[in-house]
Length: 295
Image 1 (cartoon, rainbow, N blue to C red):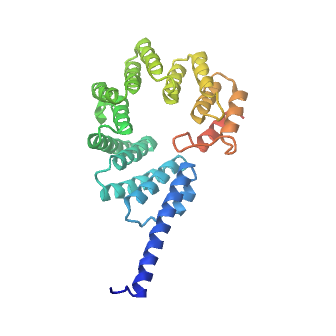
Image 2 (tube, rainbow, N blue to C red):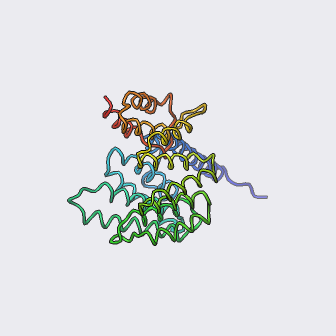
Image 3 (cartoon, one colour):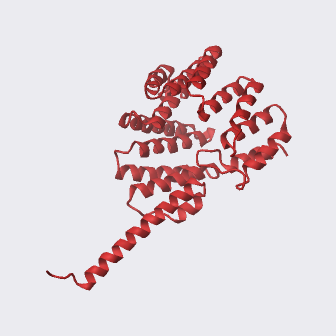
């Protein structure tokens, strides 16, 4: 049998080492992202990569950093677009591309209104594309639903469109469907019906923290401070702090003038030794802005 030459074996070994190192860096970058260390995650990534997964993660990091500098939303959109071009069958890439354009629309100043309208229409385009590509993608369905519910007719929104997607959401998850109906009734100013649907959602899935917190937000919007407080306090019982519930509770306490209690919650929120945040939680920068209001 012909033995491979040493140079060929060495080359194979070096290639394998490079692949392993790349996979390790990408894994570490994902871990840094998940613990909200977005700058470290970016340092571990190659911005000239042709790997859609890596480009997507770069985009997510810039998206999360958009709360500190809104220009990061443009950079995020650029990387999401590169990832989507390399993998056009990814609903997730299209969804995040829509989210980035949505944030650009939301953070564009009043005097740049024509640009904001264009950005919003792009968000709609990508939300719809993601939802069409993967109708079972829960987040894509919700993004499309919320766009229709909140955007005016001029920008392609409308309650009728939202109702159609609400039915699709209900087919995926019954509790989610009730939440969607609650939001539709709230938009129509039928607050008793909205509350009834929130209650049904909490009964269908009593252990779902997201549903409970969204119900508390509804009660807070309706000035039912006691009801909202009871729900949020219930969600904070346990061995670890629930960041979403504590952030919302701090906002509630600011609303009703209990600033010292709000301050105590926010100080715990911004302390990484006490609260372990995920990318889906409100960023520390937002909590610090709230702290400025209670000093």
